[in-house]
Image 1 (cartoon, helix red, strand yellow):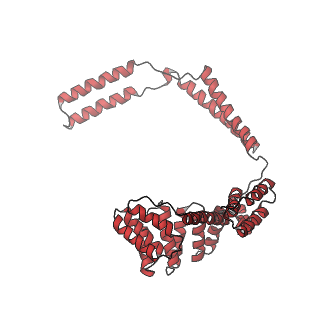
Image 2 (cartoon, one colour):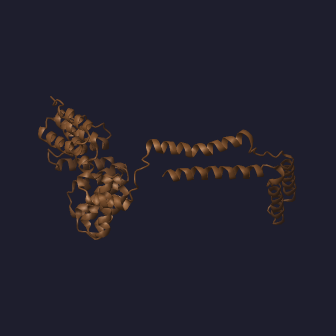
Image 3 (cartoon, helix red, strand yellow):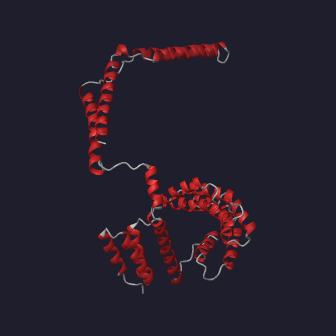
Length: 359
């Protein structure tokens, strides 16, 4: 790697020298050809051509000739400005040419790992495939599943898992591609069709566009009461300006949901927005449901991407505050084992486990 930086510095200096020599040679007025006379002579020829074709009159031709000739004379009399490639300017360029690779080398030595061997992608991928799933990040899982699905291109379930991993890796376009393939392989599976619709909404930044609407209509044709399809199609109507119709469908969906369904708060908020109202603040019980939902989301995120020490500390503290001691202890045990060689993280985990429960 040091050889690379030395070579880069030498090549940069040589290139700067060649540029300066070229610029110095071109600085002489007699060596530089002025394109202005050629340009204006061409303009005169074009004027004559327009007049010969009858597109401008004789008076306009004379006027245009006079203006072009005036500009030609002005260009010919203008002083020729040349860049002086010598003196302080030349020294500054040479200094920059030397300083750039030197600065890059210094930063690399300070922040990089000069003695660290290269890790080809194929080698890393083989290591990920041999590792335990819970030790991999979402992008690493997605990379493994891409290779697996290439080896088993007709496995719809593999494509579904790949789509979930791509979504967790914040790659919605790849998730949608995997879901399209999964639906093509198993067109009878409604769950894959539903996931495709949700993936299209995610890819569109929350907008329920025409393709997603068509997918959800297919879901409803198979399962008329499907809550997800009903919700997104109602949201599409609200976005299209059919607020009353969309709100009515959302209310009908709310009536069909069980009283303890965790989706009810979000549905109530959607109804309020469809009716032009501010969503009502959640009750104390509703707030606890929201908090628990956030904690469950954090736990799911850590399950997909466990290499997040701060996330584990938050999860242990959250379980402790909620008074869920069994979950707290299980999370603490898992995180302790994962970060056994990092005592500072273990101490943060133990402090989080001692957080007082919410009253």
